[in-house]
Every structure is written in C-alpha cells, then in structure tokens.
Length: 220
Ligand code: GTP
Ligand code: MG
Image 1 (cartoon, rainbow, N blue to C red):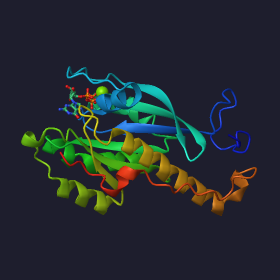
Image 2 (cartoon, protein in one colour):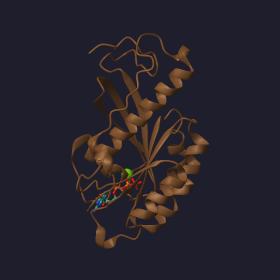
Image 3 (tube, protein in one colour):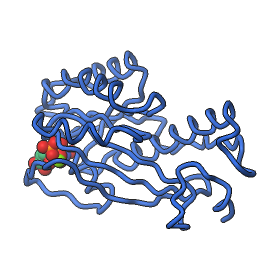
Image 4 (tube, helix red, strand yellow):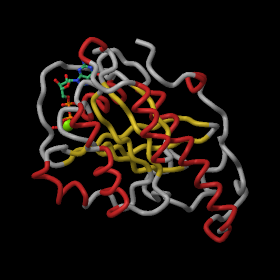
C-alpha cells in the first residue's frame, strides 16, 4: 500500500496509518436517528432507548476505499435548537454532511431546507451533502414518501438514500458514497489547483461504485 507520503492535503503528521482524513458531520432535527446511525456504522449496535445528544460527540473509523486508507472523523451533532451555537461551530472544515430526517416525522422533513441554510452559512463551499430519510423500517408510520425525499434531494442537487439504523439498511452505503463523492470532488479540485498536491497521485479518480448504488433507496 503506497502513497502514504504523497498527499499533504488533510494529512495528520502524527498518525501515518492513513492516506486521508475526512471530517464528516451528521445533522438534522432531534430524534431523527443521527446517534443511532453513527453507532450502527461504527459499532454495529442499536438501542431503542432515546438519549438525546448533548452538544456534540464524535467517533473515528478508518475505511479502505480504492487502495486508500481513509480515516473518518464523524461528528454527531445535537439536533436540539438550544445547542445550535455549539454545533454550527463544528461545520467549518467539514468535508461532508449527512443531512437526516425521519420518514415518520413531517416536521423533520420540513426542516431540511433550514439545515441546508445552516450548511451554506457555516461550512465551506465544497462540502458534500447526502440527504438521508431514516427509519425506513417503520413503513406503517411513514408520512414522507420516498418520492418526496427524492424530489427534494434533486431540487437541492444532492444524493438521496432511505436508511434504517435499526435494521442496518443503507448505513454503510451512505458513508461509502459520501467518501466517494468527497474523493471525486477532491481530485477535481486538485486537477484545477495542482499546487495542493505534491507527488504522484494527481488526477487519480476514485470512481468505483458500491454495488448498492444501483438502487440506493430502501426497499422495505
Ligand atoms: P438528538 O441527539 O436529540 O439530535 O437525536 P438523534 O437524531 O441522535 O436521535 P437518536 O439516534 O438518539 O434516535 C432517536 C430515537 O429513534 C431512538 O429511540 C432510536 O432508537 C430511534 N431510532 C433511530 N434510528 C432508527 C431507525 O432506523 N428505526 C427505528 N425504528 N428507530 C430508530
Ligand atoms: Mg443524538
């Protein structure tokens, strides 16, 4: 596995065990399932008890994508309004956002636009966003159709998945897709700003698609 010394961008000199480090944020209204989603991804665990996040927390996970070790620093933000000042302070420097609503909660869907505004206000322009409708295992309580989710995503120009942290549906796919989108964006900006890159990896495009991308929406 070569290339460890190639990339200067976002490289943490203290830890040589990865090629890139991406800072990601999970945002959305309280109780949509942000913490559950992260726990499912990082620890493969789920609990039905609701412990609302206070402020902000993070987990680290290293993934392998296209022969690169990508260390993900995933920040789980509190959805409650009273923590907004704290959480938005973490938007800066985030390369990717998972913007989550709950398919059984209309209000959480109606808030998506406000969250997009928060991203535009507090994060850098190149941050990549994926819209996620969580709790797709709760079909009987669904109030937001998959079609409305997809339409909103199209309108916002972002990708869309329905997921279930409970049933482990599309959780990994969302993170992998976000990593791929960030990698694509990165090689695009490296192409236009080659000074950012020292070494041989220039122009490498990381375009391999995860299999689940053919039908990213939840079938349950
Ligand atoms: P805040 O920290 O307040 O912003 O909320 P949050 O978005 O982190 O929500 P959290 O992950 O704590 O989940 C809220 C509740 O929804 C908990 O009771 C979870 O067990 C439940 N939940 C989360 N994801 C799912 C899911 O995919 N399906 C079902 N059925 N329940 C879920
Ligand atoms: Mg939480």
